[in-house]
Image 1 (cartoon, one colour):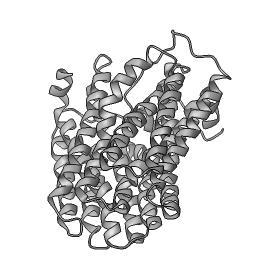
Image 2 (cartoon, helix red, strand yellow; image 1 turned 30 degrees about the vertical axis):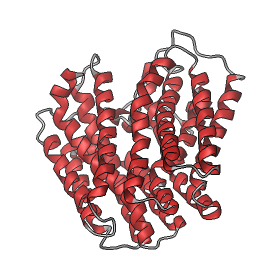
Image 3 (tube, one colour; image 1 turned 45 degrees about the vertical axis):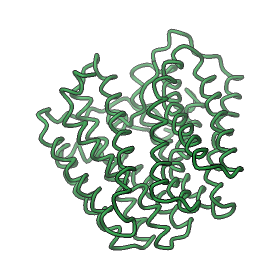
Image 4 (cartoon, helix red, strand yellow; image 1 turned 30 degrees about the horizontal axis):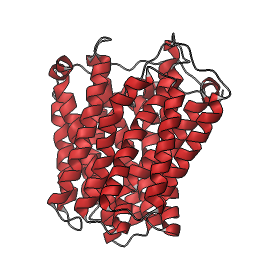
Length: 406
């Protein structure tokens, strides 16, 4: 790990600064939207727009990189992100914000693909796992730190929008000045969605459901806090707890998954999440109770995402893994589009508790489907090629060609 950090620290530092900036604006928009008088449904549209842009970016960015190169794409998208962040408080209209969130999602998708290209190019087969682990850790550290920064300014003013713009601008310096040469993009073997579903129905369905969970809990957590009457400080602590849980439980769950049927672990974790979310949605808990729920939710959702990828890879040859990962990332992003929309609609109907009830419904569906799939298929043998991996939307996966039901 130290070797990876010593050779890739400019990139990792840049990614951390990017995630601080992204984490601030993600939570801040929910708080500022409530201050501006946006309805819950309008805020949910704003939050969902990010994932629309992210999907578009995942499909278009690889071609852009092949055409003009990593450095130009990175600089162009980064400049656009920095500009958009300071436009939010100037144009406080939910329709304008929706368009800006599409742009932000598109740009960050391209930024992630570019940054991960550098990381994969700098790593060797012996260090790639450590490199991706370090990459995931700095992402979470950056987002956790972003929630603390929310307390240094007034969400109704401009300062909290200027800070992420500055941090995103600073993030380009270590990455663009890194001595590591820009990698080349290679094409990979294609795999249709139909073929992917035949290979792993649980993986595909699970990715759609967890996409809704991810976007609901990270896109609407601050909206829930505002409706619940929490202070900015408490909202930032709640959102931070989601990431802390994922950071703490990621590797313990991964270690366990390599020693048992992954579907049992997916089922058990999804069942725990269902019960936890039902309790948080039905009962009026003290703030510490909601924090515990957030820790468990984050600690379950991140590992379940990785478990689904690992379980699918158990049935794949190495030649198919990149294309399969690209397809699963697309399914996860497609499911994410609807998370904030449905969450906002439910919260408008039943109140703040709808935030937890929607996530409970998704995890209940995943629990039931995983149990059903276990009755239809035997577990893969011990000779399966894959192991538990840290979730990351790698550039190789994003570059894979997906043949739509051909």
